[in-house]
Amino acid sequence: MSDVNDFAVASEEAAVLAGLPEDEQALFAAMHPSDTYSPPDGYAERWRRISGIPAYATYARRALEAAAERVGAIGRGELPYAAEKAFTADEVAALGRAARTALFRDEPWLPALLDGLLPGVAVAPTAARTLPSQALLFELVRAGRDFPTPELVTAVRAARAATRHAGVPKQLEKNLKKVEANLVERVEVALRQPTLGFGPDGVLRRELGPYEAVVTAGAGGATLTWSKDGQALRSVPAPARRDHPAAVKELRDLVKRVDIQHRTLARALEAGWTADMIPPYRRWRAELAEHPVARAVVRRLVWEIETAPGRWQAVLPEFDALPDAPEDAAVRLWHPLRSDPRTVESWRDLLTERQLRQPFKQAFREIYRLTPAEEETRDHSDRFAGHLVHYRRMFALFRARSWTSRLLGPWDSGYDDAASRTLAAGEWEVGFHHVLADWSEEDVIASTDQVRFRRRTSGGMRPAPLTEVPPLVLSEAMRDVDLFVGVTSIAADPDWQEGGRRPYWEQAGFGELNGTATTRRDALARILPRLKIADRCALEERCLVVRGELSTYKIHLGSANIRMTPDDAYLCVVPAPRKSDGTVFLPFEDDRLSLILSKAFLLADDASITDDSILNQIKRHSS
Image (cartoon, rainbow, N blue to C red; front, side, top):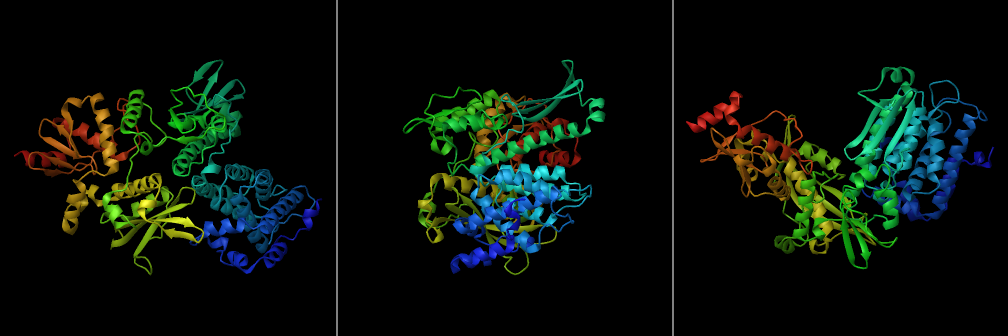
């Protein structure tokens, strides 16, 4: 056995820490115990500093190698096996810190080590359904949740498949969702895409007896098809399910993994727009545009390639040939903020004509520029202040868009907060202030307030005037805030039209369009001529006007609220979800746009409405 087995993980760490300056020792003292995970403010910054300590980085590698060797020795029978006794509590804590350091540094030696350590610590060397150390397994996964890598995700999945413990796979799967969600924020790491065994054409073939299974990583998601002797089958053949159950499950799991990988890549590219972390042209082509799995996402986006110094050429790989450019040419995602209106319109026209839906809003993306009012206020924006929102929905959106925030409620320090998100590779931070307005068990209402920015300096994050915020950082931050307000505002909720909130409900529910609604209007202008109800519809500045047989209706493009002409009487319509028949193409995913179109189809044929609650409102208005 290697001398590494003589390495005392916990005491060696203590010796390393004792030799550090006091300010560096303090970084470790401030860490929260991993078993009560609640990252304090400045958590990532603290690990940035720890990971820059050479002596501790050296220790981290030696400690993890010692752990891997110990697990290997247990598996080979060279060390006695006792369930959950492979590592002490102090060793687990020290290895968790070592793993975070190595993951933060994205050490090149780490993937191979994790490939052995994680599965090894998850399965007993005997037939027992126990583990050498469940504590270390989940501590390493928690470390991966803090600083994830694609290789760690693969190693955790291998551990999940290997373990014989009944409850561990479910817990690992739950933690994996958090790891994969956080991977989005490590853009330079998330772009490192595994091939998952697919060929260059994005296809994986597997022979199971006389049957051939084909998994295709396509633009609409991964698909699994079956055939026999060249004849396509409608579903999984029963003999394959009976004789090769593990292989069939593996193929089905692969379909899910491809879909997750596509979503993670799309979210990482979108989240990293302000960071410009795309690799140079040669690597971008090989690792993204021509990658067997990633290509389905990458080729549906518009990219800019610096074909000559200062000259950027936009290309949509799904339809365009890649240009001749130097191997080290810079590559970046095209953004409408960096383009002229005519070019933006042409990209939108092309996507609509070709019916290509992008992985996320790009050509139809909203842009937000600094306003004169914000130049006057200097250090904050009131652009989205004063809105009443369903707080629980907004809090869920914070998490979905990678913002951090404390939960508001009737407890100490629960009255107000500033949700925050880092941008531009951690160089900028945006804060969205909001306060508790109304609390009940059924619903919680918050009121929105200022948006502020901070920038990284040698002394940490410091407030910055709006005029110094890079335009792309400002636009992307404001877009998120606009999304939070637009989706969760009570203006779109008819239950709030009565009572003391009615003035706000009226103003916001039928007022000027925000950025998202303006883009929605632009999309509708392209979609309407293709609809069978086109002759009954007209676009106004704020509304889609629909002419029915019984009345004429105005659907607000922001809230989707409806008024009837000529006196603007409110019409409450809650239509059942309308299944798409494939004839209505939407260039981007937007639940509010789908709702507006659903209401438009319903009201254009109002003579056929059978819902008494809707008919009675229309008849009362007409009489």
